[in-house]
Amino acid sequence: MIKTILNKTAIEVTFHSKSKVLFMEWKKDTSIEEYQRLMIECLEFGRNQTINTVISDIRNQKQVNSEQRKWFETQILPAAIREFGVKRAAAIYDGSRLQQKHLENIKKITGKYNIPLKLFTKKETAFRWIRKAGFNLKGLLLGHIQK
Image (spheres, rainbow, N blue to C red):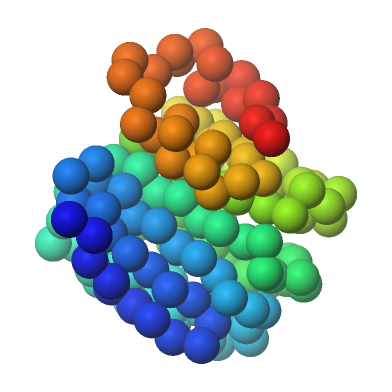
């Protein structure tokens, strides 16, 4: 069952209960204040659910705000791991060098928590990766980009 958690002008968040996947689809860029409010709403939802995987589709975010990234790395990521029990994550990006650099920085942080972060350019490929039975730990930790 797929449940819509948030549907705002900047983001739509759905929860796939069978696979325990939280899917965040960013629709546009946001201010730091709006970004923080939306991420806190996602955390609030996660306090009552088991979430194994988070997928974030950032293809429609054209500005990569370093303040948002730093706040995510120091506040949201540790809380999500501690409170959700997230085991893996994926990001869907537009293939641009700017977004890839942004995600590589986040990947360094997730690696410190032993949370693999895979990068994709297509939503279908990300969900196919999630549905795979028996994840290959070496492949997850190396996190090669899948197109």
